[in-house]
Length: 618
Image 1 (cartoon, helix red, strand yellow):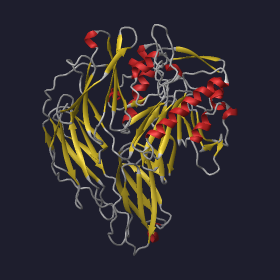
Image 2 (cartoon, rainbow, N blue to C red; image 1 turned 135 degrees about the vertical axis):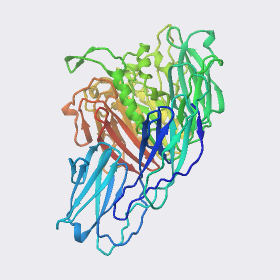
Image 3 (spheres, rainbow, N blue to C red; image 1 turned 90 degrees about the vertical axis):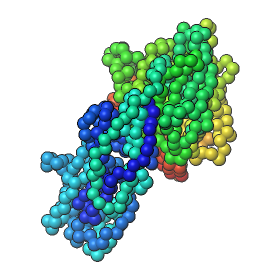
Image 4 (tube, rainbow, N blue to C red; image 1 turned 60 degrees about the vertical axis):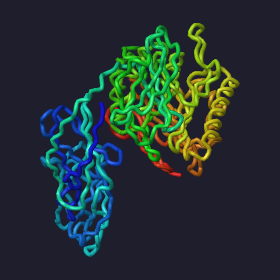
């Protein structure tokens, strides 16, 4: 699908009356010749989306997020600044609205909120009511984009000037209308200072894309490269000389060829080849399309990929997807359970929810599949369509330990020894699998704690020594280029589930895994394995850091697996554990990185609500 871009200044206004009689919204009605999707972007971030039926007029509601200041004069009534992410600021007259009673109602009169916060409110238009202690009542309509609502109140005197009113949306909005098999159409929507906010109906005719369809590659995945300027590709094909070539083509948003890169191929599982390509020198914050080929003659369908910005970015973390999709019996602490495994369906749902957060990539913490030697698990893992658009950085889990793991992923800076890959005929095992990548100002180091199961301390010490070599090499390669270090691995050393007492986990701790994190100044350690959620306090020397500066260990619950392990009470050490949770539901985490600040939220994927959050700064 190509993109045909032109600019049009639409007669839309984003404004709030000085006494909050209108909303900071715009209504953009569309009528399109095919079933399509309209999306609104501000500074490259998607803020609104709407499906539009063929020849049917539908309206995209856009809610602005400005905090630009204005001074309208006296404030005899409340004024409102509404933010589409659920933050509402009320500026109240101290004389008229001191100790105001605040409530939110649906348009039908049902009370939705009484007070100043609510964890989850569906998208819609609501009535905000403010009642003063002396009977003064003020109401206004507010459009909410869905999710939590938090209301902040500030009081001013009658003669004060308002300082919190919204004025103008910063920058320009881009409206994109798209449909599969047609060229996209994009408009630039300029914000104006005053006025009311409806546009005329936009009659849009999307032009059919003449690009011929290609084939669907087998188990295609993209991954972060050494830096954000690089993207890595991996896929399978049937074995044979007809498929022993490997190419990737990169196109710009309009469909013009930007570059073609040649890669390598090799023997994978029986009858299969893996294909591997790295494409460098991509421009930040740019829309691309890509296509792959096994023979340099036949090309796949084209898939979308957008490079991250060169500063702030967002990533997700998840793991323990355990793709199997069949009923099975498991044993937890001596008790057997039969579970109906729906991990395939759930993984698709989890990926859709992660994609809705507009993440730049996903940091995996292991156990992508359940049965390491069964290729069907990887087929299921790569099935969600978002896997072709969002890079995935995998860590090996104990359920992934087999040769085919390394045939499915294309790692940058892979610290593999010459015999690190499997010998299929002899069934040899890996002895490494550590790698790293620099994502703007964050150095991610991925350690393979899943493969090596030491039976004695010396074996664990050798493993930890290799981890140290990887960390040292990663830091030396990027001196002065990062503010944060984040480690990804699988077998958490700070869980409250039963796996925390496994022999290999205890030996790795004794061998100095956590001491290594202290030595190298690691900020966050992301792990999984126990299908339970844990966040520690900042730690040093195995204890909570007295100065609040240290390594935070986060154990993520399962992203798709239906298995959950109960909390072992004796492991729930309150002196180091900030948050523990076993709600028997799948989850994922979202990290917003902005220079020397990181904000983090852990989500219950099934209810799509936040179960934990944290903000860090340096």
